[in-house]
Image (cartoon, rainbow over all chains, first blue to last red; front, side, top):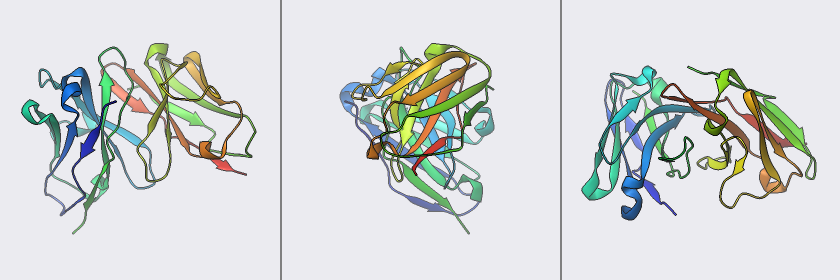
Length: 119
Length: 108
């Protein structure tokens, strides 16, 4: 069982950046790709990108290219998602989720982090 | 980018009834890359089905997935009270992951 624990809720002003963390069980940290998926209030799920915790290699959704950065700290078994130039439409719950190397689905999810963008 | 369209938007059924949820893709999806999730209010999504038809660990056998190409189906054979939720399909293709917009299964 993989446990993913995300950082707490954030309130940011338009134009600012936010960095959300996702800490995984140490024994499984490098056993999965880690994705970030967001969900605006009352809306569906939207893929943002993924990071390979082993290599640090990333793939980003075209919509977020240039605005999102995903990094990892292997010593802390933690991945990070930073989103810059925030606008009100970025208000959402942000989830991290694991993808096994052998599959294309999200097996384990974090509890979600609410990011509110408001002036 | 492959677009997934789920139907119906809302399904109103009673406990014990059969639920059939559809997910249609804008172009062919490799079956092994199609998954279904359940989401309840205030919770993260939960994996139900992967590879179009394989149940995830701990998922009851009243949940089943089928389909290929551009048409996929999630079936709940007999609805239990805890099955009323929103369901999403998801696919991977061309280095991009996309979700359907969701089907809400509500109590009639």
